Length: 112
Length: 111
Image (cartoon, rainbow over all chains, first blue to last red; front, side, top):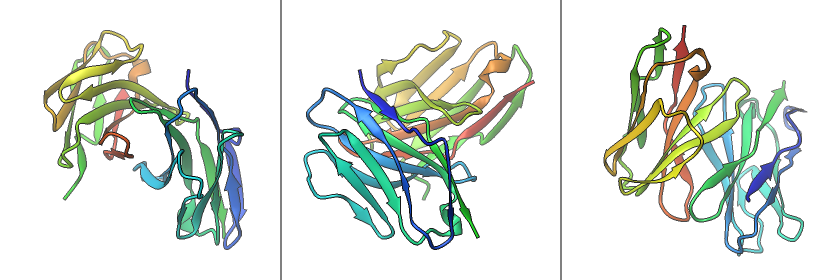
């Protein structure tokens, strides 16, 4: 069975600071992808970043980067220079070829 | 152009009624999904279709029935609505080994 765990239900960060959101997962599949999605108050689900498991290099997208530790089955998201627009719910997701598995989410608040 | 669209975005109805939510994607994706997001923001997969064929059918009451007339559309019909059905319902689509694209969601309120 596949599982995705986000152990931080809520987090906050000062504007311009850096914050890291944690995600661990479990799968017996050798090939899989990992994603971080953002859901702002508008409720639209927006892809933040994705990581292919076969790639050793950590993915980056502007201020967003991941720390992918395959052996530890860990996939954390780092947000640098936090902005007010980063306030949102963040979901970690695992894709194993036929289904997506989502974590329970982390609510991030950026404080001015 | 909207990639994944859902109608309506808001739906308020009485218990016992039957309602439908429509979803369309113009991305040429083969796989479409329905998710339910409850008040705690948990996302739960309900159904998944690949090329009009049902491939995932999670434990969902029989009152929920998906229908895919073609691979660009996946509609959700709900019979005999109950209070517990109140939630946000998301449609999504994807290609194999790629990210999902989500619709804007439909907030269903059952009174």
